[in-house]
Image (tube, rainbow, N blue to C red; front, top):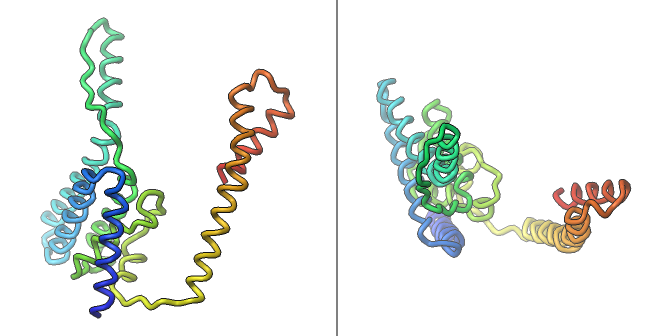
Length: 221
């Protein structure tokens, strides 16, 4: 029991260092989302009154989706509003904040929400281990690129001890190397041809444009 908690502490520190290395200020956002949903999850489990449970769920939705919407869409809607007003001859100054979109905010927002919603639907019970929950939300291997994991699938893995398995380690390294080969050797080289064709598409004929599109498809894949 004690060892898996130390494993979670190490994972949490590593995840926060990984995420904070880009911009440490955004650690406050992931911490706030984690804290809100951890607290709301406990209250949802203890509360029987439907109206109070709906209020708790609404609190989680407002905090999480409010942060996501603010950082992702504030400048867009501000500029769109001014453009719309100009159609009617109304001049206004654009007030934008030049907001930087926090990396991975969509992934951990919906991951924490999956936890709260599953508790609200009585599909899971809240975890009693805050370190496990915070590590689940900030788990760095899938923090910035997904996939979004449901709490009922991933969170139980943080609540039990993990043992080192050499066969799994070898298989993991094999997949990492294969992924790096596809990225560095195949995708990057195909990307060079795609860039040349797409930048100068008027100078190429149909067969070359078709090949560029095929190369682009394999590059993205």
